[in-house]
Image (cartoon, rainbow, N blue to C red):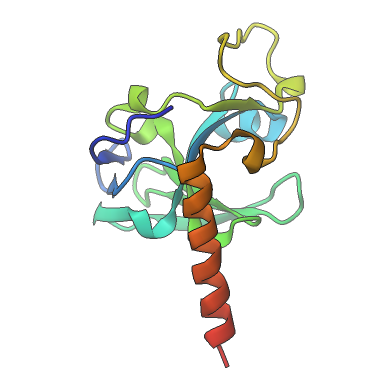
Length: 169
């Protein structure tokens, strides 16, 4: 599991956008799907899921870029307006309330190793998965893999979102 003992800072290459994670992430996915491979230009994408209100902008303002996704629902990628580095995404399933922070943009990415490898049926054959880290063929149920504290945070987030939706006229 990731190290949440202190805040995690990160940002883009040119340092126009800087951010801080106010807590450890909910969970860290290493996605091996072909869409993530194409979008990252690498063999996988490593995303730390965290509540959006726990991502504090320290400097700059990322530009949200709508991009397609395999689901057809799309995603919004937060990119530096100068160097264009993707710092996080908002996927349609979680909406704007959850950021999928690109672990490689953290100042200390080693503090957020993957909690799970997903979509391993399309991983590159030369990528060797470490023993002891769960790996699934496609996606997973959070209740089967997330720690209790992260499930509690997700439930609290869902309650806040439901209350906000109910309060709208």
